[in-house]
Length: 117
Image (cartoon, rainbow, N blue to C red; front, top):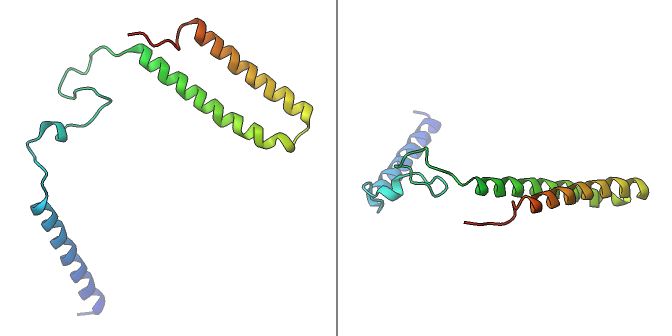
């Protein structure tokens, strides 16, 4: 028998022994309902899937994602400050910031930023 086959067999046996030992010695309870059920954003997976969902929570999430993407777009503008003409950079940056402020003002007027229960 070659040494490679022998070493592969030894590694296979040792790994299986460790797996069996961990399964026998683990303190995991199979009967625990909470630990066996998947966690889905605070919803009970055993209940009806068509329960009412707060639309305001969804809108706050979308607003957060939009502002997160905007921050990712602002960072290259700061880095490119010394690489391009100042007037061009100022026009593009000002336009982008004005669009962001108009969006924030619109969200403020629509009461999207107020969390009411």
